[in-house]
Length: 250
Image (cartoon, rainbow, N blue to C red; front, side, top):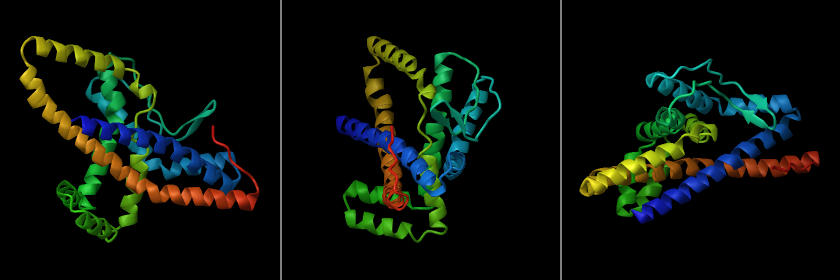
């Protein structure tokens, strides 16, 4: 379990770094191509629109399910000071538990979408089975076979757009510390009442499976990101030379 947790922390750290790098450099490359801030903003938002729509819609759906009122859903970009909001949905203030569910909705929805695409289009089960037995040659064969899937580039694009917009924003996770504290208290009470075996066997097994899926999911998104990152990096270098300018990210 400790090894899995380390893997999860590494994958999450890479996802957070990749998310920041992608959003910065995608904006930068589009700005170099267009030379116009407003056009660059709208093109940047358009590239990620499927993921943004799923992100905001998941907030709205879970809010309605748990009985929290929402405002008008917006999936179009806007500037807020130095920040860019790709989309937003106003949500009525609620208790920390419901706020945590609403805030975590994009991660659940995005993960489900990426997993579904993997299963239905890319044959993820075969890759998982090969990985579990260490059959790396079979893994490579299945990865090569993925490129022959119908409309493969459309599905790759959807994984890219969804995978890079499914992470909760800072405002989405404000209630998570309170929820984590409450969960720790409940776990402590279960131990005191003699439910250690339940935590170790039931909850522990569930968490182990969940962590494995999160690691695989994060690794899949990063795998899709790698060639796109390389293209963005090379394209930015080329455009900076052609235009004789240099973009600095802060």
